[in-house]
Amino acid sequence: MVSTQSDAMTRAQALMRQKDEIEAEIKKSQDELQSQKVGMTDRLVDNSGFPRADIDLVVVTTARSNIIKLKNDHKDIMVQIEEALHAVHAEALAEKQREQERKRQEAASSSSSSSAAATDLSATQNKDDERGLAPFARVNAVAPDSPAQDAGLLQHDRIVSFGIVNINTDDVLPSLSAHVQSRENKPIVVKVLRGESTDPLSLILVPKQGWGGRGLLGCHIIPI
Image 1 (tube, rainbow, N blue to C red):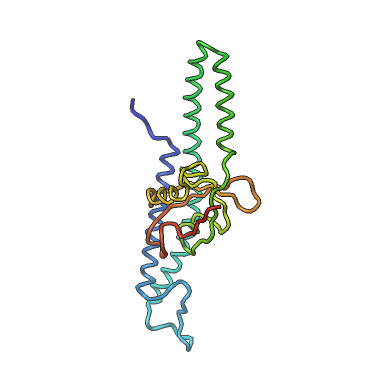
Image 2: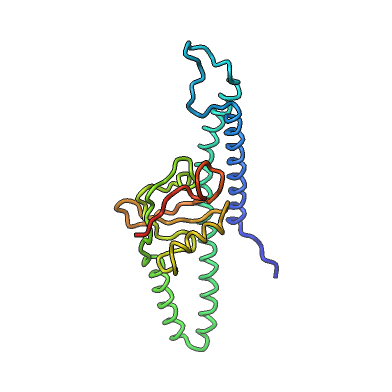
């Protein structure tokens, strides 16, 4: 049987390609600024108020404008990626539930009462899996312009899950580090509790090198 990719997965992959293209364009504009030895906030006039003669003003102003626009585009597409990944997750969960239902119906042909009990137990376990996780770590610091900041992580966020890693994972922080290394340039769904809220907030974090600082994340995570 030939498996076909879902529309949600196709959309998520297309959005990830767009994100990569935007990041490449941002890097290109940042390189143009670097070639002029200026940043986003350096003055473009000299002490006398005249345009600086040591830089190409057209290159600098165009690069700055592009970076501002592209960073806004990047934020927008990260929101779309999060929605698309939720849709992929929902489809996978629905497919799993359909398969479980099919198996339960087959079992019901020989024992309907046993099937009903299994259904109740499965529903209870699923709810416990969703609600029973406590945070295992806290974000102690977030570096500017880092993957963590781009994802929306904030200082004091409490991490409930980091991809496949949660409080039930053995050697949780070393496992988190290993998971991050294995997901370089790939999205990770991070669920956090923020402030007094008891409802986890889902964020999309893409570990990567070359963002201007140390590590793949640009944040400091400590155990709770």
